[in-house]
Image 1 (spheres, rainbow, N blue to C red):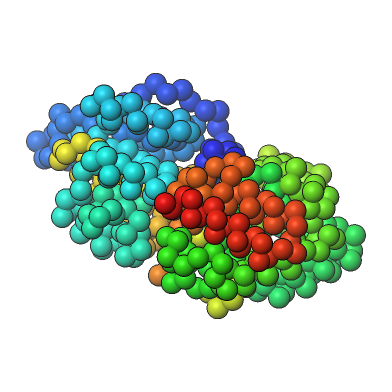
Image 2 (cartoon, rainbow, N blue to C red):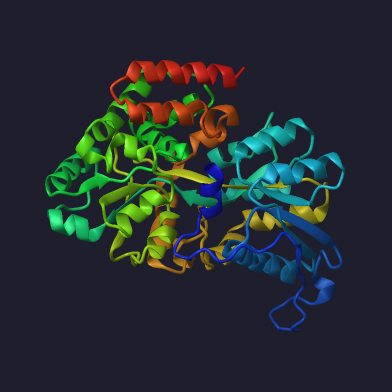
Length: 441
């Protein structure tokens, strides 16, 4: 389910720590008296109290609290953190209705920005925050945090979803090199299959993994402009561009020897079991999923960078796809403290502090990849920056949840049906369009 993915997002190389409770924790201004810290009189938010709510627990929470401490040391604000748990909407809803929302909330889906903006639960960002966004982000990210012509949010954290992970020993045994494009991927898969190993382990029971696969192929073959149109249902799912993407996917899932345990077996395999079948039981060579595969691979006993390696999602068309998930910071109270924190999170300074900590990727183009603590994260960070304007957000997370985010329904269900019967491309398109029409009413 999608919440299983959200729990793992951007774990990177860090093994997930035990989840902390939802009790708020406080980040106090530094009392060290360090010469580098500004004097209390110079701190513009001395005595101001702020509450920030986000879904993070464990290592992700610890890293974010270090960023909040840096903000406190700089401004004098006292910041309290509260974990929303995995269902951010369920946590924030009653607080919004009760008139006591947090000053700042970090939303895991851009769709929530639209939802809360319609409820008048968000405060438009000030000119100073918007200027910071303009300086550090491409216009696409600004648009994701906007609704009805007003800017409400800043993307503060990203997950890299355009990756293929592989077991190096399986490649060595089949004498294949890591593919650099789609045709090479198909050729390598055939060679691996001929060597007696299933090329791919699919997580078909977790429908969101199939949307991730489709999105990468579609962005590559159809291009960013069509991707934007399809994500808003401005073109139908019966469009020929969708057929092209499904035909590419069919090249993999249409061959029984390419899919571990066959298509029916793949539909009974969830995430992260599909990862363990590559790196623990070693039944397959590859799994197509995001940077958080690293955590599961590590827990399977594979060392990332050695036995567990990754490549960028191979180009299936003219565009090298870079799909991101991520988290959007918004203000729920109209206060100088809330806006100052969002400006700090949108800045290269705030991003650089966060980038030095485990489990973080920045969509901020002015946060140098040199800040990242390990080679893998540095490589992923560089990929995000170098992709420039062609980077796109997870399409299913932009859609109404009835279509793109519900287990057993909408896009998840139709793509699972396609995995079950990859020969029916036109029928799959018709079903996708029928579901989209219902969701975009």
